[in-house]
Figure 1 (cartoon, rainbow, N blue to C red):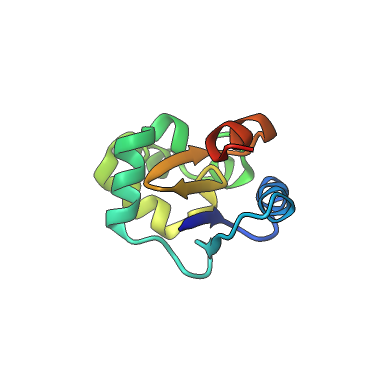
Figure 2 (figure 1 turned 90 degrees about the horizontal axis):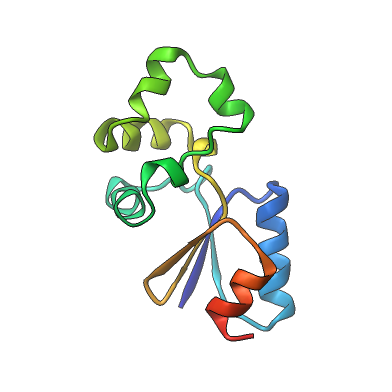
Length: 116
């Protein structure tokens, strides 16, 4: 089973969803803004992808954070609480396919990962 994590109104998530549907892939969509992300899941993402890749430092949510909150993003434990409180900080989408993670969306990456 494949799970795509993201926010439905994000343009990049929309592109990923359209690509998966157009290429006949069954997947489950997890809206982490509405459904949240538990600490175990975020811990796995941080361990596999790293905080530098996982946290979206280019978005408006990051720019609106206080310096104190930005400092929380440097430590995995405090970053988990920050990402749970502000899921828009998670770079998206996150695709979990057979236990392997892909961050973001590029047509060529999905073709390679999913054998299209």
